[in-house]
Image (cartoon, rainbow, N blue to C red; front, side, top):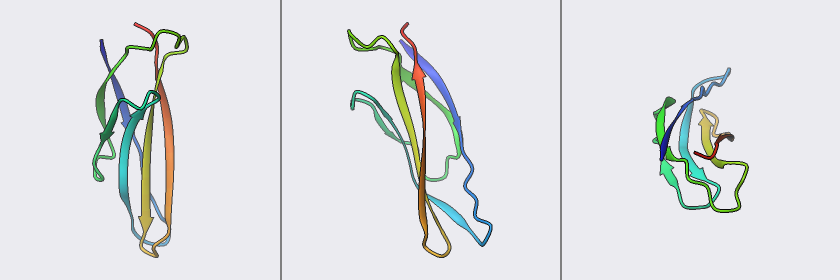
Length: 86
């Protein structure tokens, strides 16, 4: 069964311009990996709700974004979304 996850992020820099370098979504099993593009700061994705046999706490998906500012400084952040058993 597929379920929908909505996401959104903002990149800002008070000294100049900042832009995304990468934006990905992966699952805890290492099976699902998707490049969400560098210019999609919000949207929805469909992911698998299936959980492995002994996994009772749901399947986790990790959104990761990396960015660079005009001075060349890089930073990254991540957020986790858990899809419960269906």
